[in-house]
Length: 162
Image 1 (tube, rainbow, N blue to C red):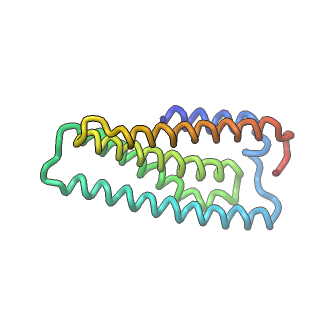
Image 2: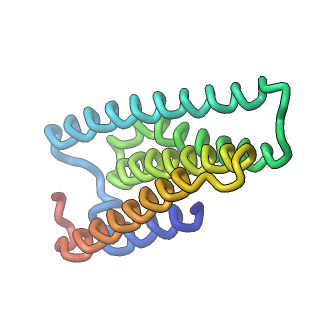
Image 3: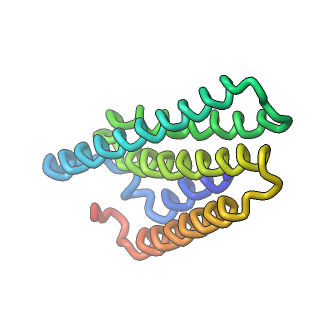
């Protein structure tokens, strides 16, 4: 999934580099972006808190089954993505790419959190069908959203600030 994250950012920037690498000149648009970034920051912090609580529950458990390390690794990746999303708020006023990075790290952080829960359940249950199905659906929806975003950026004239 980390590869999907990197490829997604690179493809979206490649499709319209003038848009993503431009600065936000209009003060109304900058205020709108800052407001949206603040909302995203709150979401990232809330989900990161849930992630941290999940790790605390796992670590505090006296009966840790084999394979719990993989779930903890993925929890750590989720926490890292969510922290990047949280911390990128102030940079959004400089370049549009930071808004893309904030949104994408939030979404991948949530996906990694979901994956870590699937792995955690897998240590207790042989195959958590419902969770795996939910994760697959969420990941397919993310891929579909990326496709639609890519199509929109491809059709957007270079230099357009829409």
